[in-house]
Length: 421
Ligand code: AMP
Image 1 (tube, helix red, strand yellow):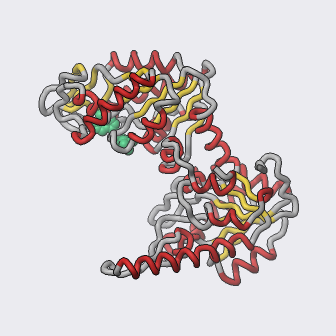
Image 2: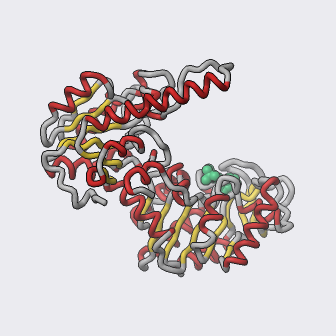
């Protein structure tokens, strides 16, 4: 398989799928360019080799064709500035303009195509069906869009000599430009960009080639959204630290009094099953044994320290207590591979951020001592950034849903399309 590092783009046109789905303010200006910056190493490598780039992305969730607020023209100045070249724009990713501009593209030049999701073909889902459409009509529409999707992917492919996927954020979607398009390039002409490669390498360092002891810290609000991850990790890790709101479902399952703390009552049996499974697999599960309880869900709530299994009625655990912080930090500091997904408390409120901050500091310390640490999944990324520790860990993932599905053990269509698995 080709790698971005070894591929020489001189004289080649590359179609690169990026994730430029950035937030815009009311004036339609980019408010956070992180995702655009994340694709720059790949774009710059192609241009500096003497290649040219045709950039494809989605922005937002347009549901009925072209909508100005989702136009990629709004981000063009930021892309040009960061790339250091004046990027051209095609007002439609299909059609004559896109064809002509891609044909005329010279080495060192870049062309940004209009939002791929202005076409239903990108996602391959029928649009505009009446709510009361019959199953037959729906099936017919689905068949029709799938056929059109192939033609759409084929046309995008026809603009370029080589396909580069650097859109990790959409790697879990089997869309035209993230997966299907790869069929129109031969083995040696499709590859991952740097961002995509880094994300894959980071996850595989945790799941496949990890150095022991391996510790996963799984937190956040709900057990139900993390079950598949926990099950997949069970055969791969030594320690599992369960934190955040989801820990209370485990406390209750074990007979604890959890007051008003977050709990999924339909997950109690499953929580016990996980504890049993961990024991059988030899995984050391660490649950909190104390908590900072609050009298309401608010930044200025009154608090008291409780044991995890004895929270007074109408109080709720919103953060780890000092004994839990100590025990968990010790495990983290003695680990050689660490995965953190989901905060340890309501870190958005200052007085309930201590647990997440302490764990983040322990991860930073372990990393300084040679451990590999991967932080991923929306809120833990927000937490590590809030504590200014992002540069003290090995890798902070840019993928939300894509990362979660990857660590659940699923094969991501955007990855499979290039490397076959
Ligand atoms: P998730 O999206 O499931 O990863 O959950 C992240 C959210 O869980 C964050 O917004 C946290 O504020 C919240 N959270 C963490 N710990 C608790 C807790 N003990 N009680 C309620 N919410 C929590």
